[in-house]
Amino acid sequence: MERIGILFYSRTGTGRATAQRLASISSWPAYEVRDAVPRAGLSGDWRCVADTLLRRCPDIRYEGPPLDSFDHVVIIAPVWLRSLAAPMRTFLTMQGRLIKAYSVICVMSGYGGFRAVDDVATIVGTRPRSILLLKQYDVLAEECDASLCRFREQTRAAGSAQRDDPVLPAVD
Ligand SMILES: Cc1cc2nc3c(=O)[nH]c(=O)nc-3n(C[C@H](O)[C@H](O)[C@H](O)COP(=O)(O)O)c2cc1C
Figure 1 (cartoon, helix red, strand yellow):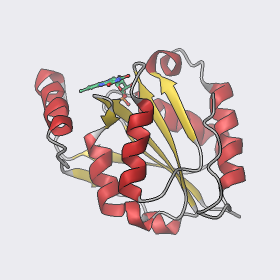
Figure 2 (cartoon, protein in one colour):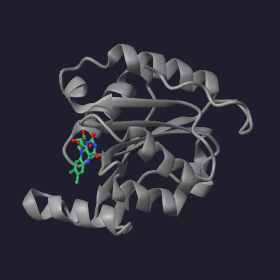
Figure 3 (cartoon, helix red, strand yellow):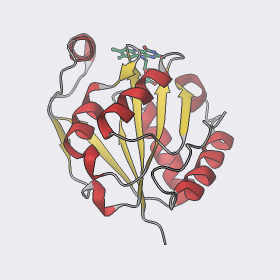
Figure 4 (spheres, rainbow, N blue to C red):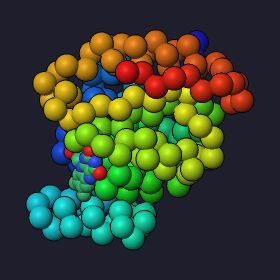
C-alpha cells in the first residue's frame, strides 16, 4: 500500500482547514510545518512580505517524519506575493530532495497559484504529479469537497507513477 502523507503550512488557518479536510476524506496523516517565531498581527504581515521579497528562508519547526518515509507527499501552502509562502520554502529547501513523488495544493485569495507551484517544483527539482489551487473563500465556505475528492483520486492514481511519466492535469 502506498504511504501518502500531507505536509502543510498555514498562517491563518486556510491551509490547515484544507489539510484537515483532505486528511479526513483520505485517511492520510497530516503534519504541520510551523513558524519558529509566530507571525501574528501587523508585524507578522510585514515579515511575510519581507521574507518573500528577500527570498529568505525563515526558521521553522517540524516534528513529523522525514519525507523519504513516504511514497508520495501532498504539499499544502499559501501563496504570498504570487510566490510560495516562505516557511514552506524553508521546509522544502531542507527536505525537498528526499521527496519521491508529490502533489501540491496552494491556497490563496485568487491569483499567483501556478507561480507558487513553480517555486515548489524548482526547490524539489521535479514536477508535481497533480496540482490543486483553492481560493480561501471557497475553503472557508466548505465548498471544496468535490475538488478535494478529485484531487485524492488523482493523487492515489499518481502514487506509483514514475518520475518521468507525464504530469497529470491540474484538478479544476
Ligand atoms: C504577505 C501575503 C501575501 C499574499 N499574497 C497573495 C497573492 O499574491 N495572491 C493571492 O491570491 N493571495 C495572497 N495572499 C493571501 C493568502 O494566500 C490567503 O489568505 C491564504 O488563504 C492564506 O492561507 P493560510 O490561512 O493557510 O495562511 C497573501 C497573504 C499574505 C499574508
